[in-house]
Image (tube, rainbow, N blue to C red; front, side, top):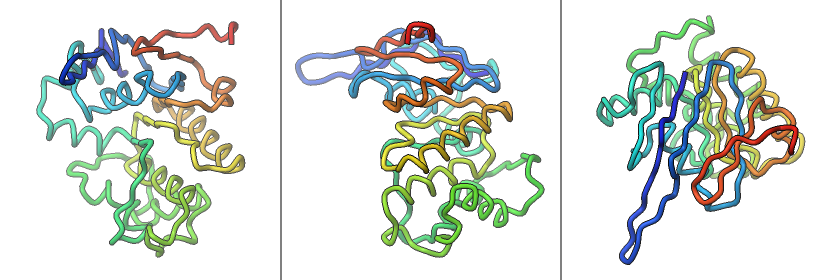
Length: 231
């Protein structure tokens, strides 16, 4: 279970300060599939970065299985992200001096305590299976500079799934994808949720309104749950 309690992020500028996220409360249970809508600049990305432990809140707390993110140091949160959280950021990057396969394997390579038992495959075989699932296995030995934006996004998705995360956090995951590959990504989100994993997506993609279990809307940093009957 992932819980955000009165979560706020304040950014300070030379002449003023503002809330990017203000008093957000969110409880996500195993198997939840949640989408967050809102205009650009509404605070969605900042919220996801806090939920992943990439940035600290100005106020409030985040609990993962009743344990506070912020009772621990940055190293602990980095290990949490690598081993239990799959992140698909809005700005995707791959390491240019590694092949596609090596990029996908990277989270497993740096994991200190990989204890998952879902897959009986070796790390290499599991990485290839993820690339096959996303339709890019033929690119396993290519380098990032030879890939399209849509291919890079799908490979980053495979990398995010490499350590079989219990939480998947995705920021605009269907951008740069055509309709066919967008449907593929959304199908994978549904499958991961059905496995009992938490999926939270920040998006403008209207299709997610039809497949998410819960829908939230952000405006000026304020997070509100939306009644699906009023969509």
